[in-house]
Image 1 (cartoon, one colour):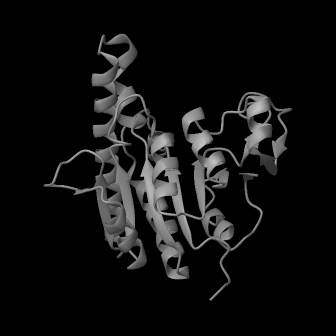
Image 2: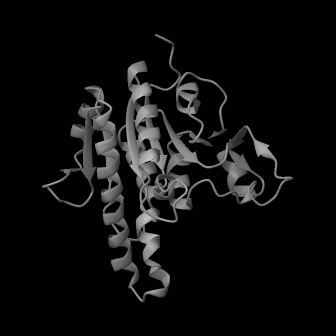
Length: 238
């Protein structure tokens, strides 16, 4: 077995990452893509927790133009993350991975309530833990939920999967001259105003010395390479 740099990770996925080439919703091919990658990590002995957003469902409602009140809208977004969590759970179990879907909002028919010690025990038993419904409170993003849960379960790192291969000084999808960073300090990210995570999440990681790696989730070997210590994406620490 290869020597692992990270033994317990929290993988942060956006809801949009499930859309594939669609304009909204869930693409079954993307579910299979992520499930196979996570299965490969488990076979290496990595403990895996996942936080997934809900933008593929909630933003389809065009909430900003709907007149939905902010707190109500935030709870609707939390429900969207539960739907995505259920879909990912199904995809993982299809490839033979044991999972537990945990919700920050009680819905006992489909998900366990969040209990920190129980979540850690699931990880120790080799189950993938999917955290859904954000933090359970409005005004907090799923980035904040990822930072909070990663710290609570003593994860070694947050792996933030995106469509690009790291952090750039400009949007590489719009600016061909954008320069990629291999390593950054938390202070440098703040001083440069780079969008890694929202500031609540980012501050929580900085204060607890929890590193963040931003990487291209669509390249199949990246997750495995990262946990084995290869320099993939952009590492934010210090």
